[in-house]
Length: 126
Figure 1 (tube, rainbow, N blue to C red):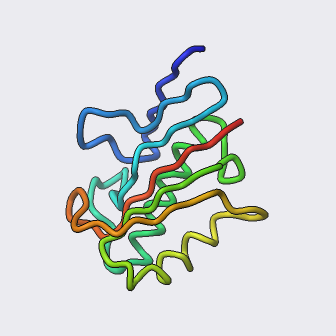
Figure 2 (figure 1 turned 90 degrees about the vertical axis):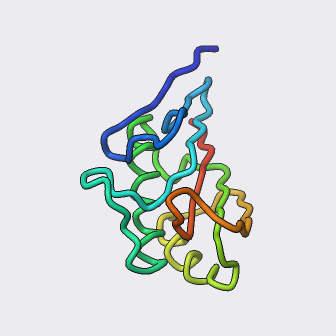
């Protein structure tokens, strides 16, 4: 199977030695996204809802670059710095999926890149 690197200007450039996503066969592995605005390069983090929306917009851009959308997502991993605020994330996250939700795990961590509050990675399939 061929490995295809996915990078788009619709999502922030990687801040380390990784790609936005790697497609392998019919699977797409999307690197964790944080609330960086791809146009300005600035964090969109006035509140947790704002952060979550920006993360989801970044993920959507990567999915679209691979010819997919949120209906193709089969698994997500959410990293959050305060599990007590998970309901805020859930409220925003749920709006991006129409009929069925992917499998998911949520992990509380002590810190994330750029000291944001949330990071989400995804696996999608065609």
